[in-house]
Amino acid sequence: MPNSRRRDTVEIQSVETGGIFDNFTSFSLSMDVSSPWEANFELGNAGTWVDIERFIVPGSGYRVTINGRPFLTGRVEMTDVPLDASGGSVVRLTIRSKMADAYYAAANTKIKVKNTTLKDFLVELYRDLGYTENDFIGLPATSRDLLTGRSSAGKGNFKNAKIEKSNIKDAKVTAGETIYDAADRHLRRFGLIHWDSPDGKIVVGAPNDEQNPLYNFRYRRVSGSNLNNVIGITRTIDYSGIPSFIYVYGSGQTIDGARKSVVGKKVDGDLVSAGFYRPVILEAKSIRTNALAERAVNREYSARAKQKDNQNIEIDGLSFWDGFNSIPFCVDTVCTVDSDVLGGQLGRYYIHRVTLSRDARQGDRCNLTALKTGIWRL
Image (cartoon, rainbow, N blue to C red; front, side):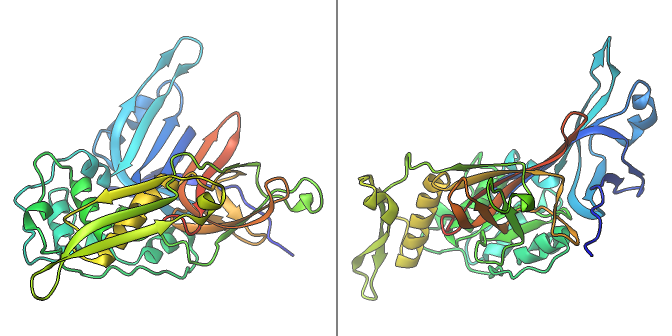
């Protein structure tokens, strides 16, 4: 017989003291492979501030867990105490990952880019924020397995590649460029991005939509509706702004020093078949090889095509119940969608954003944002 599903638990644990509190009235947690992770909590009643003031000063380190597994490791960045004559007082606090600083802090323009590796470049970029080499996770599966408690097939092990030597001036950190932007600029040249890990480290990898599905969502109105496990699904198919074909032209060099044409191209067969004519042609003289040109094409196309086939899924609870166990939701995972309203077996989707919430009106809710596999390529 299947186990009975238990209510999902969320706790805040002090990194410094190990103390735990869970007397909050509502919360909202978010994780995204494209932005900093954060947690917002509302706590208690009149008198709460006196009890917890010393624990939530800005900079206080906390670990947020779901069902005992780490969701976010960060620090308090904001608190406020709104007062209301009818509702009394509450305390609200926001916890963000340390990586959030990278989106605002200017990068060191003196960091070495000549004869250095991509990994060493990242370590130097983030050193001022307190990160070390051990804080970079080169295999994304390690991070998602930490949160989900499940083993997943993972690709994209971080290779210690050399920064291109073609244009050292172009490779340097520019004045005013943020740490995140400087890192992202070089990572994307190698088909990589970086994002938060539940344990406070930084994941370096590529969106992996080729892994086995971890979650299976079902919403049927006719046969089999008793097996539905979502509140609702919104499928968006939006061809606005997507190029029918895209070319990137670079400039390479042969052995004898002569110039050669470097071209990357991608054609969207769906748009062409639907009668859309939207050519995009880009010139990038700093691109020296066909491999880099192909990566640039993939980046440009993916940036424009994320709404081509997109799912927004709302679930009751903070984790996925498979009939035996609760599996926490996590980004950089894959799900399947089955809905007779939306077209039947829709196949696999890559989850890139997760938002979890709890309040007195709706209880526990999860919203997932996922895009069709095959679209996001770096």
